[in-house]
Length: 233
Ligand SMILES: CC(C)(COP(=O)(O)OP(=O)(O)OC[C@H]1O[C@@H](n2cnc3c(N)ncnc32)[C@H](O)[C@@H]1OP(=O)(O)O)[C@@H](O)C(=O)NCCC(=O)NCCS
Image (tube, rainbow, N blue to C red; front, side, top):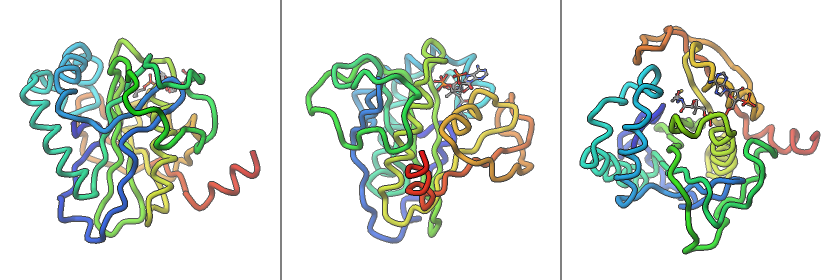
């Protein structure tokens, strides 16, 4: 959108030539597809139906964000950021013909099929968005997400974040992946906890949305640990 912890980086911020992630990922019952202009209407509608659900945590969750034109502008910005190699934002779909039918939330990181799926298949209904964000010179990348109010507690957030974590591990230079959320956002914290991220620290911050308490949890996934964890599992 960019949305969520989706804090766009300046396009000039990543100096190296970026390796692009796949534009489509299959994650159990979900398909994650690079956001495109044709999604603007569905995103605006999903945001509009979920404003009360999103407002406590997402500073961008205003009536304007439920407007088609405003989403078109955000998607155009997201396109530039994808090209620049700083922010990769996917629309999340459920119930499509390419999803593998696996149980949401099950499996280890790495179990999603990166770049999987058959081109041209039906993606399904849009249920949210998720982004991977990189900062200049940093070896960590950050994931931000939201799932529409009508689709929560089905494991979709976990399945999408697991697939993006797995994808991030394939990008050159990414040594760790972070998920940040305010301590009061219990639903969001449930996702890194379920995947197996480690709570690295809690930092004080200026609340940016009405539900926030001002204590930001920084959850970390160390890419180097992946082989050891998978081996141990
Ligand atoms: C946070 C959010 C993405 C969770 O999406 P979701 O698809 O419902 O998450 P999942 O179904 O994968 O839930 C994973 C775990 O998180 C926890 N969780 C999720 N929703 C919860 C809730 N409302 N209350 C308590 N725990 C919750 C649970 O531990 C859950 O596992 P369980 O269902 O097996 O108990 C969704 O609620 C949302 O979009 N919230 C508003 C936007 C937001 O906060 N974005 C993140 C900003 S940091």
